[in-house]
View 1 (cartoon, rainbow, N blue to C red):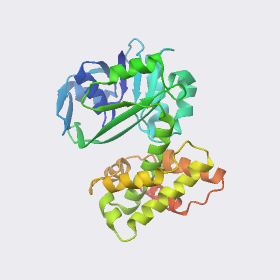
View 2: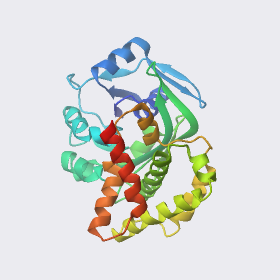
View 3: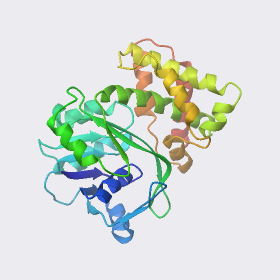
Length: 304
C-alpha cells in the first residue's frame, strides 16, 4: 500500500518512521520548513525501542502526487480544517482515512470532507515530543496505534491495512470495537490532561497527594455521566479500569496537553473538554470539576 502520513511530528513522525523502517512505501506531507529540516537532517527517532535515522519521502501541499491508499491523519484538532484542505489533492474515492486525533468531534467533519465510507476509526497511545533539533524523542515504551472499521469489523480493506501496518517495532492493533475504544481513550485523555494541566504537575504527585486519587476518580465519574447521557458505547467498569491504568503510569508521566502548555503552544481544550461541556449542557448534566478544568485552560489560552 502507498501510505501518506500527515505531518512528521511526535505522532506521525514516529509511526510513519516505524513503517518506513519496516520497508513500507511511506510519504510524509509536511510544511516547507519541516521539509527543509528533514531533507537536511533526515527523520531521526530516539527511542528505547531502538533509534532510527532515515531519509524519508516528503511532499508539501503545493506538490503533485498520485492518490494514496491510506492516510495516517495525525494532526492536532486546531489544524483540522487546514489539514483537510492540504490533503484533498492526494485523496481519491479509494483512499482510506485513518484519523489519530484525540476525542471524537473530528469524525463528522472528516466524513463530510472525504465520505462516510472512507473514514475508519483510530487512536494512539504514545509519549513523544520534538526536541530542539526537530528529532522525535520517544520517552516511554508505550507506542500503540489502534485502528478498525466502525461498522463491519472484518473487511477486505481492513485486512490489507492490518497487513501493511503489522511487523514493526511499534504496536499496531486491529480492533473490532474501535468506536468504543475511541470513547474510552477520550475519557482517559480528558481526565489525564485535565488534572495535569490544572495541577501543573505530572500524574505521580497528583495521584499521591492527599485526596488526589479521589479527585481523579470524581472527574472520571463526572465525564462518564456526560458520555452515558449521550449514549456513548462505554463499558460499565471503565472508571475502575482507567483508575487502574492511572496507578500504573510512571510518576513523572505528563499529558501531551501539559507539555504543550509548558512550551506556550496551542492546546485542544475546545476539542476535548469543551466538546464534552457542550454535551453536558445539552443533556443537563452537572459538571463542576470539568468546568473548573476548562476554565483553567481558557485562562491559559487568553494569557497565551
